[in-house]
Amino acid sequence: MAQFVNNNAVLTYLGLLPWLPPLSINGMCYALRCERLRDLGGFTPLLRMLADDLALARALRLQGARLFQSTAPVEVQTHVPTLQRYRQQMHRWMLFAVLLLRDESPRLRMLIGVLHGLPPLLLWALLALAVLPPIGLPALVAALVLVLRAGLLIHLQRRAGGRARHRPLASLLAELLQPLHLLHAACVRRIRWRTRLYQVHANDDFQGG
Image 1 (cartoon, rainbow, N blue to C red):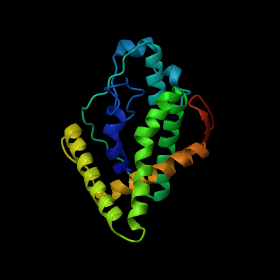
Image 2: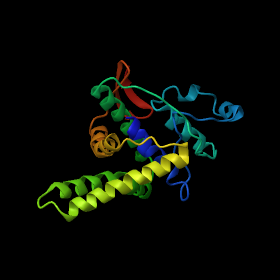
Image 3: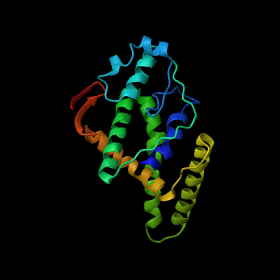
Image 4: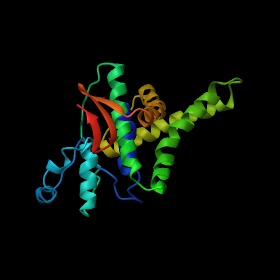
């Protein structure tokens, strides 16, 4: 899970900033002025929202506020004791991403799908070709791509956070699993959050508890 975050944090939150304003905020850490929060009515209007960071970002955008994504590193440590807990965590995160994209324009959904959804699929295809006989040029190309991928991630992590947090095998596995997690979130809208189960239709429309 840490490698999923380290692989994607910089690219997800900062990658589109030269062309598009931020769509949401980083739920791990954010800051806003007290008067802006008072203008929103505090957090009370957001209490019935499942994804609080997404709800806050949309409320601010409706107010006309400008969201700003910073490169300031934030050290966050978490722990998932089992693969089942990891699957549940990724299911929630991917479902929240689906909720975010569902309300954006088709053009923006396509752009984000190409930039963030296509690379794992291409990586799957490249590795599949590399292991098919006869082993030769495809395997060499795959090895080169993996080296370049690792180098790029290490470079981005150092630029954004001061040091690399890259573990090659875990990083690769985290990226390859992304399409499966997304498919799971698109098909199954029932999530577990701590000890509760929720059937999710929208960020403000869910049952359970």
